[in-house]
Image 1 (cartoon, rainbow, N blue to C red):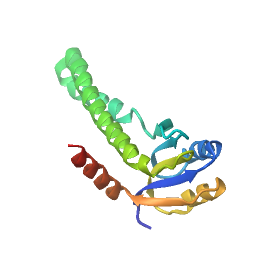
Image 2: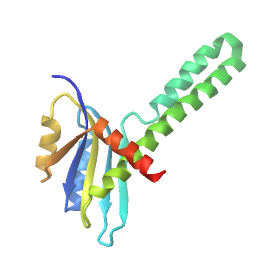
Image 3: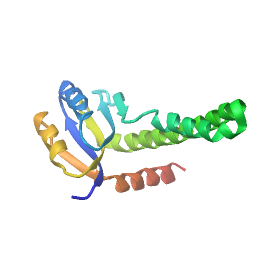
Image 4: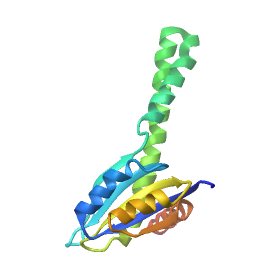
Length: 161
């Protein structure tokens, strides 16, 4: 089966069930990122938990590649290559985090007062593992294609300008 990149939304009225599902979701195959969005009874938003699988890997990897490239320049070349690679990798991670935050802001409109929503960024080869997780925690999953969410974020940015 082919891979499908989705954002999966699980709505909860029980905050504890949402947090338990968040903890269990860390083991889903294809998980890229996850977060909890809560709308409190007074209407304010809270983002009590989030995680990114492989956080730090681009920064470290780019630093190592930069350091190896700098071997030709001796010890100073290694240091400068490592520093430049790390800066580039960190910039890439910062951009990814910024885009993920913008997606959560757009999705926050869909969280009702007193509810929690578990947001999962998944590259799925099968919907079965995520559907089973949702069923175990008393929620019904709703899938949004990642490309569709990216378009909604772009539209929100254009509207804000």
